[in-house]
Image 1 (spheres, rainbow, N blue to C red):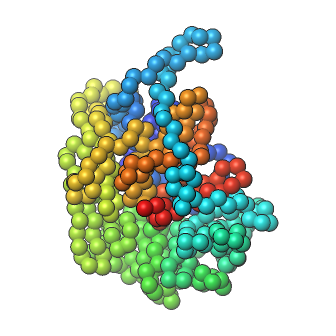
Image 2 (image 1 turned 180 degrees about the horizontal axis):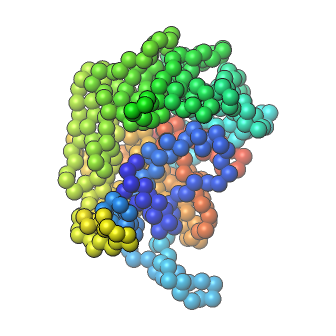
Length: 428
């Protein structure tokens, strides 16, 4: 994510009184596993009134709110607080009522009381989860039957030499589960890809993967994918590779230099502020270019793009150090947000306070404002216009934890002692 997205996301969260902030108390494992996923999907560009000044980026951004002007807030004494109270939104029905076929509610712990972390759906009734032990020294993979509620242990994740066990980028396909881990603690220049059958067994290493050399840092492994008898992956800094599941040396996928995997076989890159405006099919060679105007910033999937129409204005440079490096400062005014197909057709506005990323190329999370000042998280279907609340509600001064989008159709989150498991592919 570029500096503009980082800063805009951060300040929008503070200004909107609706945007998410990371919840406290997450385990070290969860932080390690999801730090890059959060970074890729944290550009939450809600349409609210705020001015962002990007230090060193030479730009300022103003997002324009077009709804009815909110009224000044007052404190318990009746005196104005100087802050505007957001308008109250119409709260839709719960997701259980709108899309009951997509929702499973299961216990938030395994029968033995252990916490677990959902990874992916192995099939329409089986959830792959990861557990740890008290103290964080050991990790295990389990299959969880969503119908019976019965977990089955698949394997223990081998520990990194000289450190605790670790697994990132968990993926599955064709009866196999894969992940990657650092080969040795403190020596992060080499990673190992591991695999184990879904039916269970002893994990085995597939291949060592260099993360850099004396002249170039490639970044960590990302976008792990199982394709037939191969593991496909990319580096954070670009470049797509394959390695046989049976073991062997990794090989570069032709034509994918500097590319990242969006959804195999589609790969692409960032271009300026835009994400995946051009896609390349690594199997057929087909190319797909998204329609993007010069005054737009977009984040694209295989089918659709979300984006913002911008206006660029000159802004006065205010230097605090000499020599001044901010002479080319610009102000970017976000005029409106939209969603449309890659070819430019079917454009429509995004709803107010909608978050930027599409889930399953179709759904957008939306933060609504309730009558008592609470924030209510909802899911908006851009194909049908239906909206449903997810059951996540926070008070006016509380932090909201937003479920992360995943490469597949899975969305999970816990409320109290229940884990919500949503399969978005079941929504027609």
